[in-house]
Length: 412
Image 1 (cartoon, rainbow, N blue to C red):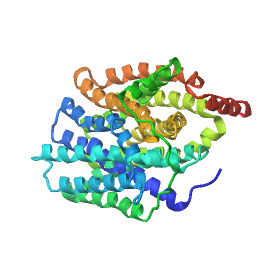
Image 2: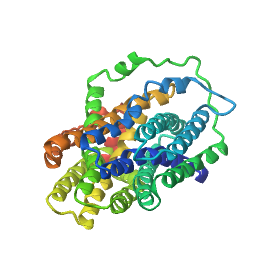
Image 3: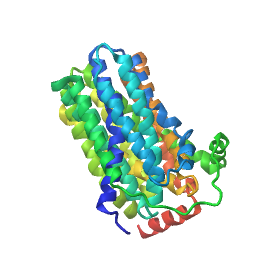
Image 4: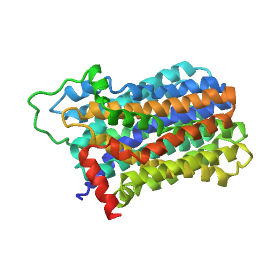
């Protein structure tokens, strides 16, 4: 397999990191900060709705596919524009006080979320265009690891910095790191591709037609339910630890740095696992591992709240999350055509994000009414559905992918 150039690798990694850097700060560190000030669980669940733009990004993905500034570069233009606005929104947010201007900070967070979603549309299309099919598992491993690194920095390190230097310094540091990718983009020259004679216009009808057929419907159910075993603990862990009396800096260190770093390490081995064992086996193994992680979370609620157990819980969840997400992202890319890569990837990944968003926000909301343990137990039951579907993953794949998987299983 042809390897990526170092400059290309670091550009993709930097862009994937920065799209989650600010988003994770607002949806994780910011939530822990607000919980510390006494905000209710029901209201905290609303903050997670910032990710709703990621769910709807298929709506404006066709626009990004069609509008091409050739002198700057088709997707390079959208990446530069999005990155500049993301930096600007963070700078503006830094000038408001977190205890008295929550609405203005949320407005900046909404702007950041919209353009981080726009950046992701253009970036996924660029990855599809510039990477070969054999390179896509590695490219999607960069996507997953970059997202986790951004989560560590935005949700963990930033929380520790906030504990010592407060709001403005923390957010300005995030803005500085986000701006690095702008320099990389200015030095990057996007390849040019042959124009299609007639580009298919993507409309809402196309969204529904994409999911026609029995196999596509099963695939949709799978990607809607698979995130439940990760999104729920992802949303609940910080409020749980706050309620158990943990300090914010300790939550940032143990959960968002040490725990997530385990997932980052696992992500770099994801492409090897896929090539060695095949997509189907990796998904089954990871689905089982994520359910085990949920049971560790239940033990946390029964007094096993030591640093070691928290690291074990988060580490278990994310060490299985990264390979499975890499597989799912790769399968999504294999299901799209070259005419509208941004659009067709977005309609699949948007559903994946929708599920994660719903499970994260609703788990917090309903935990305030029914208790943490009852919600986690309910999610454990739901998680068995994608596990069962993983055994039939061949049904969701294109003919070419089925052959590839069968060959891998034969070799194994």
